[in-house]
Image (cartoon, rainbow, N blue to C red; front, side):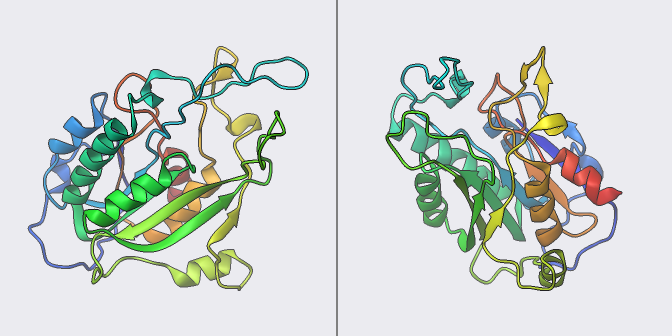
Length: 258
C-alpha cells in the first residue's frame, strides 16, 4: 500500500466536514497490503494530500543494453505489467476513486508519470471530477541517454496537481515558492537531477527501486502544498509485492520537520 505521514502540528482552516480523529488513522506507518483495499479501510475525507507514483505500464519488450554491452536496469517488475490498456485503466479508476473519497474537500492530488501512462491517468481523474491546477514538467538534468539512437532522449516526467473540485480552497504557498526560486515566480518546469550517489537506495549493491524519486522533488511539492499538521498519503510506497510499487516522501518530510 503506502505510507501516511503527519507533518508537525498546526491546524489548518478548511471547509467544514465531519472531523476524523487523527489518532484513529495509521499515521507514520507503512501498510503492507493491496493499496486499493487499504484505502478502502480509511474513513472519508481524512487526508490533506495524496502523492501518487503509480505503475507506468511501460510495456517493455526485451533487454536494453548500453553501447558497451552492459544491461540497463530497467523497470521489468511484475507490478508494472498489465494485460492491456483496459486493465490499466480499470486499476487507475479504482485507486483514483478511493483517493478522491479519502481526500478532504480542500485537499489536493499529485500524480507523477511518464508518457506511457500520464495522459490516461489525467483523463481518468478529470472524468472523476478532479480539477487540474497545473501540470508540472520535472526536467531531469542528468537523464538516461537513448542508447539506440532511435528517439529523442526521454528527459522529463509529468506531474499533475489537481484539486478535488473547481471551487476547492486548496493550499498553495506562493511566497515560499518564490523565495525558493530566488524571488522569481516558480515556474511549472522544474530542473532537478535524478537520484544518484548516497541518495540512491540500494539492496545488496543494486537499486532498491528502479524509479526512486529525488528528495528535492518531494520537498518542493510538500513545501508548496501542505501545512504543518497535514496528513499525506502515498498509496504507492516502495512495495514491490502488492499493487503496485513506488516510494514515499519520507525523507522530504523529515527535512520539513528539521
